[in-house]
Length: 356
Image 1 (cartoon, rainbow, N blue to C red):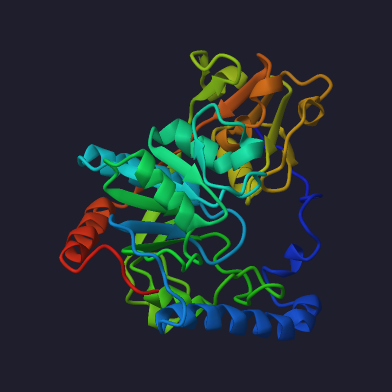
Image 2: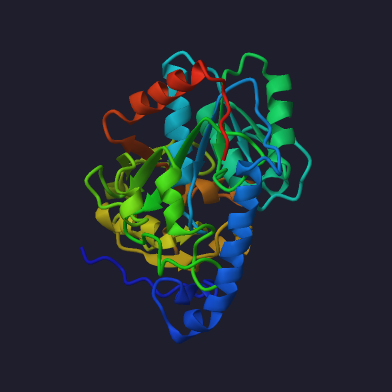
């Protein structure tokens, strides 16, 4: 069955279209990216040289982040790591900025938290991980609140925390997308990067989404020696948005007028996944962290609407029996979890924190 052609991203910012390669527009913005790079470098140097002080927690901190804006697969990586650590007898907690949420003070996130308060990704993480999860504009304050609420927590995962140097970290993991890489390699606003590619040379490991440990690492020769681990997202069974016990395999959705919505950093990744499942659909990309309304899912004649779990947490209030959710699980290269444990054990004798 031929997969549907999906249109370009009507909601994608005009500027972001110039981030994947060097264009006249990105070249015109390049001087501004140099200023951004200088500001980012000075900020990091301030923490590294002691001019600014990072908070060292009484427990080790594992940062899961990325260099480029937009989705690279951080949330599945965080969930995999949380589940792995729990299986090894650890008691992980998770802190996040809570992007898209209106609350800035430290906030405990539960599976029933309103995503408009604390963000869609933290609610998904709380639902899927079962771990103590907190958000806050001040990540240090959120971490302190989490540890006070959960004294048994013995390791903290900082979601999207690579650039949050105010919190000392024990292990740094950077997730990159094998398909999109680092775009044109330039910093904002001329490119998609928050920090220069050379930053990859200082992380503990690079997790390559839709790649493996043999995938060439971005970041130039200095990052070539950084350990790399592949990550693959698997998922082939849908659950109903209003009745999670009601499950459906892809074959049960074939033949229906099918629409797919995705308000994630890279909607095409979700659409490609659906294609690999043999589904034909009309694709509807939305901006990352889009606040869905019932009208967004109102497609005349639709037999079913499928969505990501990240979008589903924002659609439960107006969901119906024709709405289906595709959960995905990360599969990591063998040895990744043990690598993280070794790093945690090695740092235990020297204290939980390290300089940025």
